[in-house]
Length: 402
Image 1: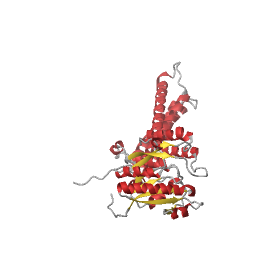
Image 2 (image 1 turned 135 degrees about the vertical axis):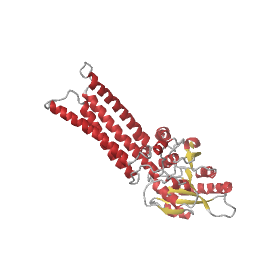
Image 3 (image 1 turned 45 degrees about the horizontal axis):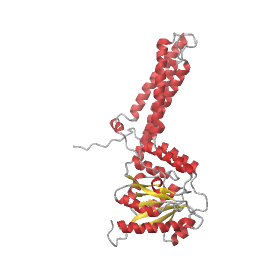
Image 4 (image 1 turned 90 degrees about the vertical axis):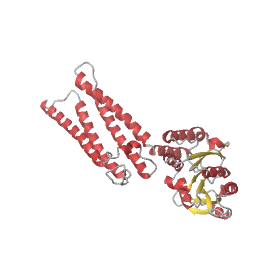
């Protein structure tokens, strides 16, 4: 808490703005009330920043007349405007909220209190605070928001009840650690996801949503922005996007090829028939599953390199083996097995005087082994590139000398 007379800015309110002159004075008045409460409760001095995204209705001049600092953010987008505002902020606590009059900024005082008490990110929850009639379309309230919030909690275990509330607060240090990059509405999801992945302390505070004061349609496009949020969730979840489907594909493919192998070795001359179509399907599933698991590893490694993921303990234990040389050697061995199998099949075909075989299983097996070997080698180079052009994918801390 600041000492009496200390004028250091501690709290910065940031509003992204694109033609919000109609509602701006209402928002600033609410922030002034929040400022007074924050000053009285915590002794913290506040500032207000309008992160303007190219307004043409005079929002900038109006904000300046209201005593608000205006910064121009040329890069378009909700996220871009907020990132620009956060970077310009002088406060160690940051509060973000829309400038359309839909949020009551006075409720931000409790959010700042949660930050003072040790939270890194405080999410507003409209489902805990209240949604006034006409403030949110039914499809957003009962389908879009609960569905996307549920998926986010499932994938990242964030434990929030409203992942898309526009009124929230975070520390400046937390903002720096998250290294946010989303320029559009997906910025809202990125903040929660990276905070959960990095182990930031996330708290919730009730927020009230009211009908906005605009005389024009909102910038939000439910279907477009909903899809942008959904695809972003999966982009940051390699386990669900790649690893789980890859493991299922691989397991199914191996199971089919085992049945195919048993049929080829034991039962192909009996009445039981396990057709060539199953051989081909099994080989395709194994190849797809293998490359999908490599993509999962690459995506996870990218998250580690970017700082929003931690290398799991298994990765650290296998760090000495997770390198380019191992994958080249292993891939080459697998590919050579495939080449040997295909060479044997070619010799058998030649000994039959170029007549067809009664099963494609041996050829499928050889082709799959050749594919897996090539994918392993090329995947090794991909992982090395993502790892910073280093042959060692996961860098282990150097041991201190005795």
